[in-house]
Image (cartoon, rainbow, N blue to C red):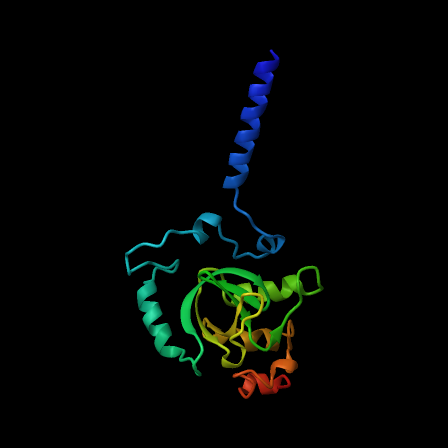
Length: 192
């Protein structure tokens, strides 16, 4: 009887581990955000089909071509387009496999007041699955904790500027002397 109980206990443990690994992982902020999507939708496989379709029915390739024409990067550092895979907080997102830190911007960190408001503000402007263009800051190519530092264009706006305008962020004036973007109107408006 004890061997049966031990075997049954082992089966239950293995089944629990398998079930837990299949459950999508979300933060509390994801449940507060009405744009929550499932883990399956985030982890869609890449295909060789260049005509991938977005949720609104339009072709990813067509919108990518238009997007590339609309947003031209400046400077000599990295410039690339990609898809938002994750929103970390109000000043950090993941684009494809790259963690991107918004140049010249600082928002509340996890546990600080206004963290969820800043994160959700960016999530509403540029939800997971949105196409973005990243213009790496020529003056800050050394990265920050492995993140690319840059200006991010999404859905017709500069996310760096929009989070400042919202009041959920402050400008990092100590980086104004080195940032490629310090002389842009949005940066000057907030103190560079």
